[in-house]
Length: 306
Image (cartoon, rainbow, N blue to C red; front, side, top):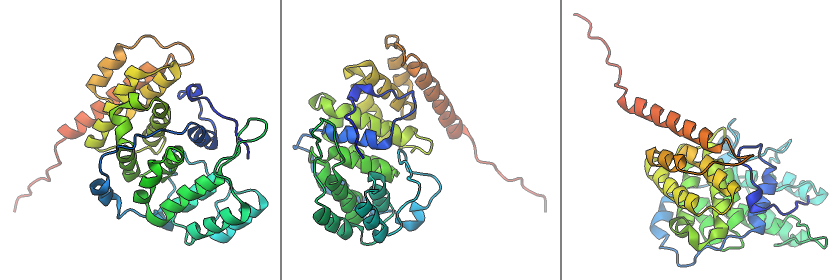
């Protein structure tokens, strides 16, 4: 399967999403330069060390992971992975779903397939288009299959793998995965101006993980970190598409300060003219629901006479 490069500012978040593979490959051809002077990860990673692939029961849950486009039929074991690899029908989604579901023996089988089929780490084509770097996808899927979220940390710090790790986190689609995203890319989130090429991939992943149909509701502390990052990015946005993407991502974590910030934005031009109004309505509705839930007193059962 060949996918043409996708411009970072070609994303239109208020329109139907393109193929997930296209988005993931957009991450891959625009690697994120993560500052290497990251704060120590040991203490935080210890919180993720118990995480492991979700297992068959979770993988069969009817709610799909955000951004995960199900193929017509998922491979159920490594023999099916091998058959698809040999007949050319193996897709990135197959690898990531298999890793998410904890397929037994996946990492070893992918190691063998990489060697036997000479899967490329990078796949440029003579005509200027890009193929699929299956070896990098296999490395990320194998890492998560073996060690869960904490095993993705070394790959996340490698600019060549950053986009692939973001895709794996999106497919895992758990609150712990969103927490891991903030942990892995904390230097960029604290100073997004230090890595402008990272802004769109990170915002896109945050948006899809929390605003998809079965999106996540972050904890208050995590929402605060995400909101601070998105506020910073909104002030640094370099094109209307990037601004609109940030505005849409703020639907899941915006607060009263966000409403003031959005109200002060200049008017969006088509096709993004509805972004600000849609986001502000969603934020107000979410804040009203939170306020109502906080003020709702528990039902006290009546006291019956003896």
